[in-house]
Image (tube, rainbow, N blue to C red; front, side, top):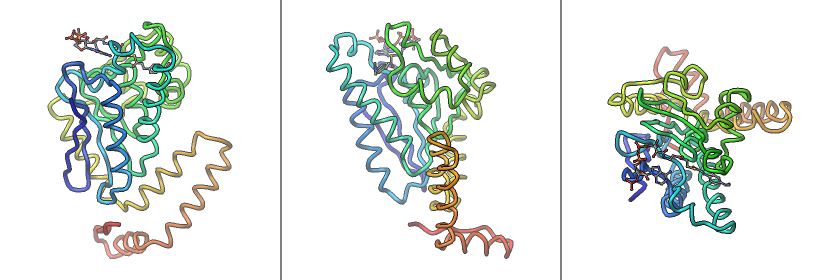
Length: 257
Ligand code: DAK
């Protein structure tokens, strides 16, 4: 049982490692993931993170149903709050996060992937919000994030039916950006992350911060924030480095922070 982290250059890969339960989350795994996200948040040597599941069957089968089955309202609420803290920590991580979905992403597993900035998956991936079949509504942000990613009508159908969405459909509806053979998924995730990490970390962070406001409040507030972040970029070395490299027909090398 563990949440593992591995580094490759500027990229940190976080692996949910509980394959005997298809990487379902109990409270200790949620707490471990939350603690790890808090260290990544302040680690300027990490420019992009990947989240994936151990083994070849599941990204995560969601919240641990066996543990939840015995919860009363107080424990249920505390568990839901922990799940919220984890998905929020991913969403608000300053660095971009890629979900490399390598099998089942059900319930809380699907919601974890939805909290990431980008989702890519293997050909054997399957997504679902089956909570209503268990007598509960989605509880880790799926009701809010699924409609933003795939649109309200498709989200309503997926959430109200609890049905499975395979990789090809996930690609078609925009739930994932790309589908790869399972054995190529880790390499493709690393390549995508490395490509992001080669860019100005300050500019990428500013873009993520501005995009996070795209769906909150009035559009004008988001546009004003974009304006502020754009202006602030002109006070950084990265802006000078990036533009001078372009003019000199060279590849920009952005320094660590
Ligand atoms: N929890 C605990 N154990 C799980 C699990 C899960 N979610 N999913 C799978 N497992 C365990 C199985 O019990 C089995 O354990 P053993 O019997 O070997 O001990 C092992 O993993 C292998 O699973 P299967 O034998 O079932 O494998 P199959 O290939 O036959 O089926 C499956 C794979 C993913 C289709 C199936 O396991 C399945 O349907 N699993 C349940 C998936 C699911 O329904 N996930 C959603 C969980 S609900 C809220 C707060 C939080 C939440 C909601 C509300 N509030 C705010 C109100 C969160 C909800 C959820 O995530």
